[in-house]
Length: 277
Image (cartoon, rainbow, N blue to C red; front, side, top):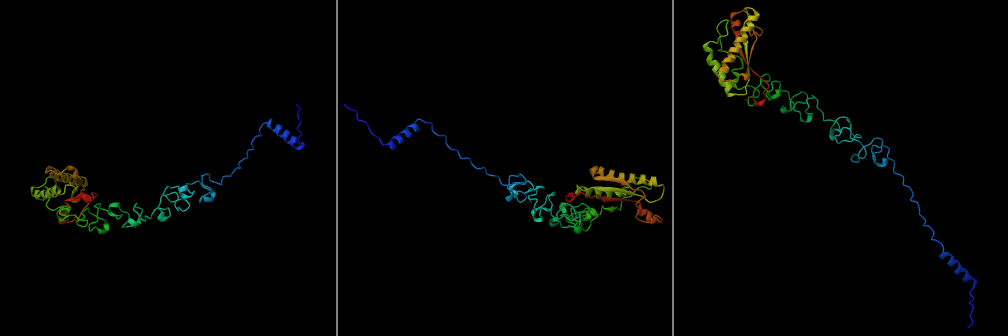
């Protein structure tokens, strides 16, 4: 048998040779493309809010206020707050509502915006502390009741001021028996108004040494207090104070005047508010 020799074109031989070389070589490394770096938008105050969206780009703030701070924490951002260091309200652009008289009650809620007063009288003065503002109080210097327009009930008024019917032995602190009726009426009033407090004041004329008059007036005031306490009135509700000849009501140059100056006064103590009665 004879072997036939194949004859291939040179171009085919060259192609086969090239392929053969390629099959014996290693695969080429993949080409990795680098991701271009993206620059973060400017944030000058480093609060995490880009300057383009930041209403306060030079001061660190919060997202809630578009990058602005709220220094006083009143809910009004600093860029519109006219009182950045003091808590206020939005209605007044971050400033506190006006309080002209400085009593802690804003003018809008203050019935007396130009005069200081407590909250329970809506900002109006109440000098006697009875809960009735002075502007409505017919007796602004004496604690009274709301029902009486700031004055005392008639039966209590009888025991406010100079008390007629309480007398003593001359130069002594012994209460005369004739005084008992008046004192018993005072006891009834104090029992009827258990929150009522009084100051028993003793006064004398100017006859005799000043120091003895002061002592005598104190002893007489103490005697009246002792009578009331002896009838069941709490001692804590009654103060006794002697004033001697220091507070005359009349002219000591006349017998009538001196008699008027020798007296016992009841002073209803104030500052006990509406629940006094």
